[in-house]
Image (cartoon, rainbow, N blue to C red; front, side, top):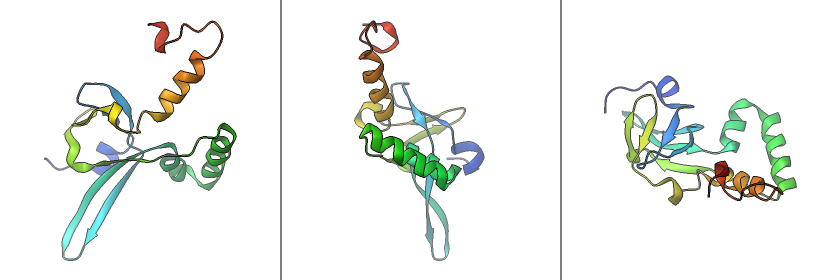
Length: 127
């Protein structure tokens, strides 16, 4: 893989699974520091709590409070860097989005919206 600027080329970039389905954005990056060797990117992190931590402690508290009200436990999806297939205007991964927890929030909102009287019962009004 060519040289990558992590903050510019990876952080906040759109993730796309092997089927071309969008699966969120990169909210954080885990780097391993090794003696006598360059740092190594270990995993990409996806999840509201990771993004909230970048914004500030007040956002973490707000997210925790909203999660408690909705009775939803925060989940961080950890994607090993080895599954990165390509980095361009999106980050293409060799995973199936449905096999990860990355889409958990979107699926929860879909259920919530579809429960509203008059909603068609499926995402985007299509069945």
